[in-house]
Length: 194
Image 1 (cartoon, rainbow, N blue to C red):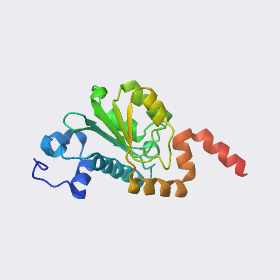
Image 2: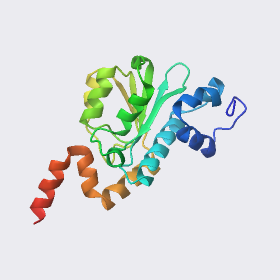
Image 3: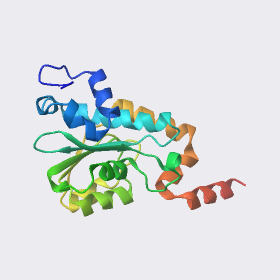
Image 4: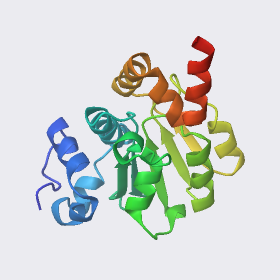
């Protein structure tokens, strides 16, 4: 095992976990190491995935799904709306797709930004028991809806994730609007400027 009970939870270890294929993690990361990961560590992985999206020219949102008992990562992803030219390739949907056909009621989803309407609906449809949100400063609103549907919502704001998203918002306002409301909203905004 690459990461085990004797390994230190470090930035390098979290980066490696963020960038390894999810299917490789059980071979490379021992359960004893996963048990050492705090919620803040898992949020850090989500933010590293958000940075990956930003580095690729996309919207900086990342997500990680863990098994509640083992704390092993079972799914992860980042927003690829721009990269894949697909309107619903959000961080949360990518992580859910990566996890595949599992019982999500036994998992926790860590997302670097408050989920949009589509992602929040999918979270409730898949039966997640808990969601941890890393940024309600830049976007919020669906936490109450998730709680009303029986999902435990914890806010664990990550300063690096907040700064990353706010930089994206200031540099690419139309891309941010498209991610949340679609191309028609961008066209309407641009028409108002003319």
